[in-house]
Image (cartoon, rainbow, N blue to C red; front, side, top):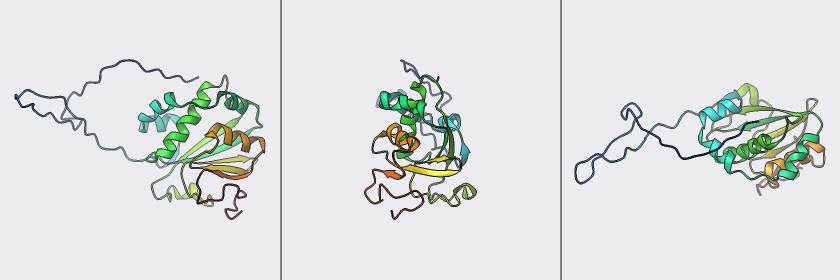
Length: 198
């Protein structure tokens, strides 16, 4: 079980030049605090895992700690039939950060592993790469959580989970809902899987 806790800490910026930091002087001529101007890391593209995403985007870890999923609903994820959830995400995307952080908090709080496998595919900003893993997916927004069982898509949660990712995944995994689930108002929320026009 993965747990994070936050305490008081000190961050040093040494050596300043190596990190792209700059030191400026106060009006009295003494040095002031440095500002870190490290470049934005390149977005992940391709198959990845949680550790890879957290390494590339350590600020997502704080979001995990702050997430407040519905614990009762989340606990029912342990009772679903085996399945696979393929998560298409962008490390450049705030919606991916929010939804994945909430999902990871759900998984961290469960007393054991859920009966579904998670597979992560990071995409570029144009959602065209990695081409070989996006063929036939009809990816429109990220994150998209595609729920599959025995090679057949049961449905997907797209960009914003209206009932929280734990609730919407539970509905798909139990078969209470099929098709596309989204809070976007420019997409049909109940379209049949693979048929965006309903």
